[in-house]
View 1 (spheres, rainbow, N blue to C red):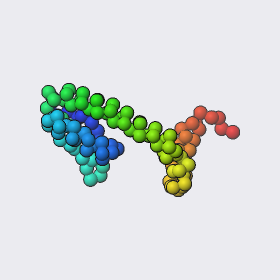
View 2 (cartoon, rainbow, N blue to C red):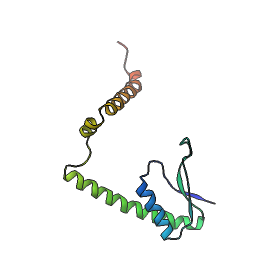
View 3 (spheres, rainbow, N blue to C red):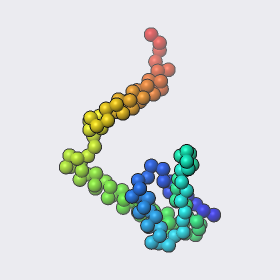
View 4 (cartoon, one colour):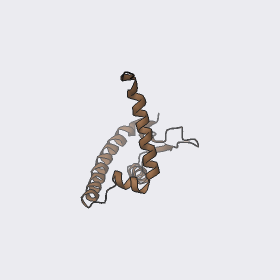
Length: 120
């Protein structure tokens, strides 16, 4: 029976390609499911053989730890060079989007905590 190795929703394309390559290189049989035309289904990578799942999971754990270290180092390089994305940069580049999201967050917070305050 197949087992879900990793969910692909919000995963970057380069990471998905690296995972495919990792599984191919280690001769682990897998298949992918897509989100479907309405994006309702959960896209993922599934390992076909239960016996290979433990090995695939161990490979994924190593891969994700390595990728985390690499991405963190890349972020730190950008941050030290002053090139990382900031809230102010997002506000300058997409003012309407930032303002709209901020208003939505404020509304949700208001509706969430307003019942705890007395009227008046």
